[in-house]
Amino acid sequence: MEQKNVLDIFDQGVVFLPDLEIMSAEKPWYPHPEWKGVFLKDLVTGKETGGAFSYHLVRVWKNHEVMDHNHETQWEWNRIIDGTGVFLFEDKEIPLADGQTFVTPPGVRHAVSAHHEDLSLLAVFVPALV
Image (tube, rainbow, N blue to C red; front, top):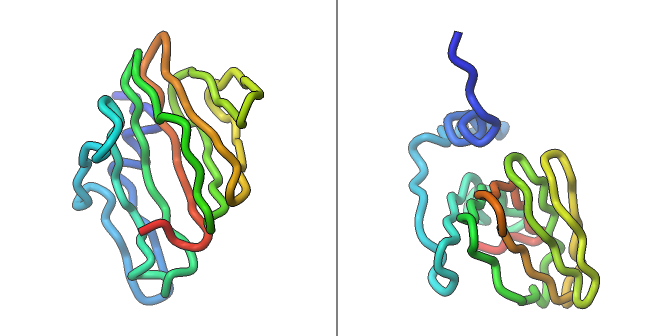
């Protein structure tokens, strides 16, 4: 039996809302407009949630990073689903591995680096980022 990795499961899964089913495979991956080696897939956007939240898959290639940034109005919840890396909360460095979760309040500077292998994560923004 073929074993899928966790990213593949989310990438090919279904998101169920009360009046809508979103097929993840039909949503495109796209490169982040500013950060080389970072790719996004918007699974649920503010359009489907009335702006309440958005839900995304994020891939960071080995030796690339989500550069230091913040979100003025959004809480950001991230769950590592594959790979390892480093998370920076302003000046605090946290090693990342499968299954770990980090939550960033609005206005807090943060960054994610994938040094030794690709890194995949789920990202939820409240209110919606897009």
